[in-house]
Length: 183
Image (tube, rainbow, N blue to C red):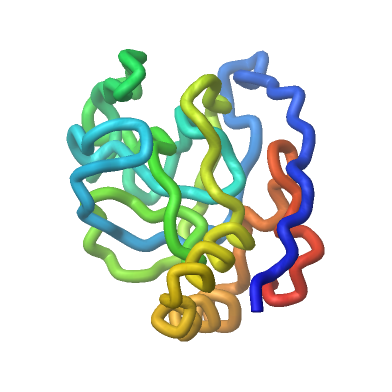
């Protein structure tokens, strides 16, 4: 059975905090790693991209626990836009993909397993498209017949990692807010 496809939330879109700091923080977000070379907005170009839910592609995030290890540099989208993420290994990443319903942020090239980390939004993306909501990721898995494969990982994330932090981000989409499956 497919979950209901609720309407998109309305986003007016502050593009960056007036002080240049974060505009939203997800404490204890569920973070995993992946290594696909083709991302939704362009090919992987270093360890500076993440997949996420409920936010625009092109959003810049910072993961303090990864400073000195990953992030930074530049990312050029398939639409020709170049993103400057600052010095290499500064912990800043671009939201360049979306994916399965078992993470808040899936970090390209990260091999640390599934962990909780704080993630700060530095600026919202514009003009590159929108990442799925967790509900849309579940619906896609149900349509493709792969929900059984993902359901155990979803339940593990939901029950053992404190629930999905990006669920509460309703600035751009709101269909996760009332989904009883998502904690």
